Image 1 (tube, helix red, strand yellow):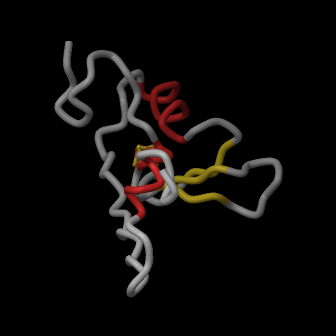
Image 2: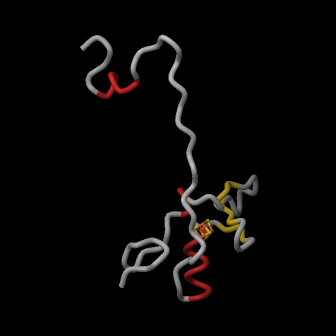
Image 3: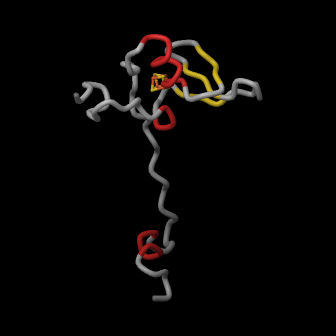
Length: 86
Ligand code: SF4
């Protein structure tokens, strides 16, 4: 059954691409979720599922800034096509 939050059937959302995920300085509990206020060894979505039996409903895709193109620099897509010398 597809979930409304992820659009994927029966899968926990990907905390690593979520805006509320963060890494802590606590070596014992290196992963945290700002929505649920939890720090854990596992990804927070696994902890949410273990505690509630439901997948996390709060996933929100993290916005990633586009890398600015250097002025007069090489086209970054050229590297993907075999490099600037190809
Ligand atoms: S809101 Fe959900 S998907 Fe996002 S970090 Fe927390 S548990 Fe993971």
